[in-house]
Image (tube, rainbow over all chains, first blue to last red):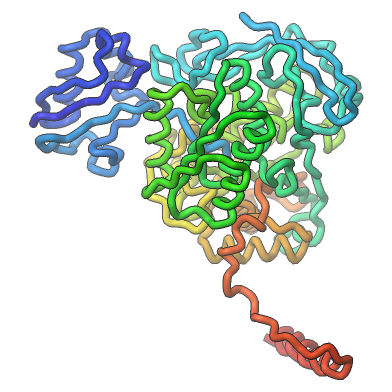
Length: 93
Length: 437
């Protein structure tokens, strides 16, 4: 599936300033593999030592948190827009 | 440590005393230092940044006596706040009452219950005034002319008011279903309100994106590490108002999960600096059942939250994807505490209970805290004799809509004594009937 990934400013130094990446992936695993291949320096920032997505990185698909869509099992649809957003924001209570 | 800040305190008396503080941002996970800048995440590992202090520099000079000599507001703890050089506060924020609550205690099985009443925090009647005061101090030093926030209401009011007071432009992003009083209480200060057709979590995500594109000081995005430090003053005040002792238990409302972790940090800092004796304090978190990702994780023994779609009238706690959820769970479980949740009807009943017993009208978050405390006493997780503080963080005048229909409409009577006597007999009769039920 052809999808678009929005890269947050904090990570653009690792994508040569690119803020938007188009790639083909069926699911999260394939998406991250595609990003690893295109931007090798990005990998340790997105995944921890065990290969899991970092705890404070949220992934949204068409503005919905991917965890509400099945997380790693979600099958991307053509035209999906993926947002990578740090979860460190909001609430003081 | 890269920054030496001198801070003017003593707003109320007008006597400025200069203190020095040293602090900087550091990653909570990989411990990389980031100096001082408007940034909330570590670019290396995407984890949150935290303010770390040079405690050695203040040991022996930041004393109980020195604190006592300062004005009764949160700035008396300036050494333990990340304030820029020569900062002079413009408002006496904080130092709210810590009240004994014997009547409420009698109703819920507590013998040593206290209420930290931030329903009367200045200037906008919620604990958010503390965090905003610190965030705006840094916003000025970083050169922002516009401040902004995502908010469930109380933060909106506080940013709008303090921005007006300090000469900032303010942009406030809120979910469109916010209570009318909180919307009015934002617009009245001249802030630009942006209503988003979505949940708070969606507003929050949008603000993270906006903060990436606009050079604004988002108090709870790029200024968040500094902002969150303001929460510690609740903990400092509790300790000082207890005569420089720590309580046995603290019950804290949780939305993003930050406050409970910051009260713990405050207690740890006071112990570290020798201002209080070391003591194990249990931390208890309170959520609304309709949005309880942290309480659910604690009950299930999980280290991380699963996000939820909020469905509760407690809008100030309606954060389904809490940023500090992981750390709140850790603070609660490591202390031997617990987390509870209450339904919306229980929350409303608890707002009424607190008002009727102690004369404190709190908003929905306070109802959640009171209701959860009642459950915790019933469960035996908090024992009656233990010194327990309930954190009441907001004012009921902002969420009167949840009490709509809770009381009968009182029909007017003519201005005649005889009419009043009739009314009195009817009222007394109603009271007797109520008592027989």
